[in-house]
Image (tube, rainbow, N blue to C red; front, side, top):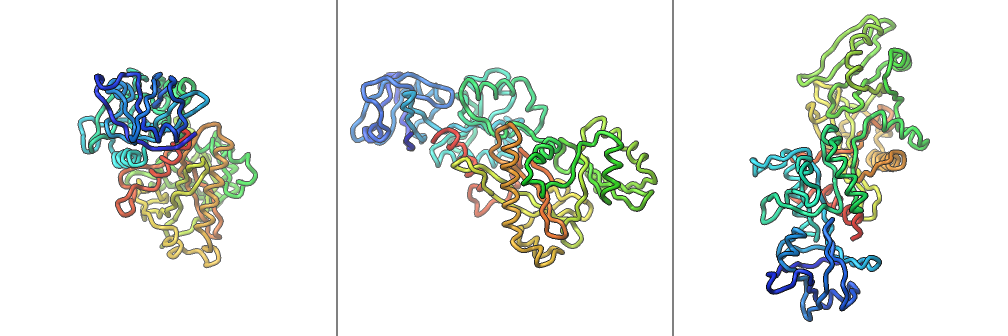
Length: 456
């Protein structure tokens, strides 16, 4: 396949037939297009049989207004183009769709809530690189898949229009309820089977699934604290006998919600700490059985994972952990995009920003930490290597397509790295720190991977 970017000129139907494509002769030669022959023009799920007309001394593509509307293309728009000789198809794109939980049509300044800026950055970066992006919700899928109702960014504003189904879908749904809707599942099935498209981050991960899967890879064992699905009192008793501290985490929780820390004070006394919006709730128990009885109501409503407690590195007495963002690149390989340190607030034992945690660089966190100089050595490189190995393990052991992962890591007092959890929907909120007002690296990497998936 050849790779190119060209500008599209939309002609009135009286000037150009709807089934004719005019292309500069340089492009015809470069793409090795067959002259005087019918072939298929495709953009996303939309395709039309067309006739080629070569135009001397012209550097672009001309299509009729009718064809432009079918393909949802604008005059002056630039797209990459590639010719697939095996199917005699000229492909425009890549066309990237972002599936989000909900939109706010009556809030033009923030039509997508906290990820509006991310969507704008993606759309603008796509325009600069010869790609196109759209944003849609499960509500848009309830009426029709094709054409798809979606938001596109044009002339510095968002407009709702009808578009073909994109070649590449980034699943940014933030709730399992949305993801499990029948229309969403049917749509994702059709994208993959009917239109030969790709969906990445197609499902949520839960903690039990992740740890059970990674246990199968012996090379990852050194990163895994002992962890089990908490199904009965016997499991709690066994773990509390082995470890002075254990954590109970909702298998499908996020943002630090519902985490319970259990500390064994002596043979007969236990303390629980529970995360709440207002801080940490503390309770004491003289019998482990009584503790289990108290929390059993939570277990009946939500699956929990019990995990070995770790003695984490600290800054001024506050625990620190790390969030690594890993993404696939232009060759489909996992790469590290960023790592940040997260320090818990004084009122919490978890470091999530939603619970008052603060961000810093790995270097700054290490400078202020209580680790020895030897334990701190090459920590950024070690965290990077662990992140990439864990991402590869997820790819190998879990049968789903992921293009980016948020990986939470901990470093204990000896400098050993541990995995806390893996998030398949890493945050894209508007409070994500930017650098020099430029497009954030995670957006650029997403476009690179989309191009790879689409064959550009």
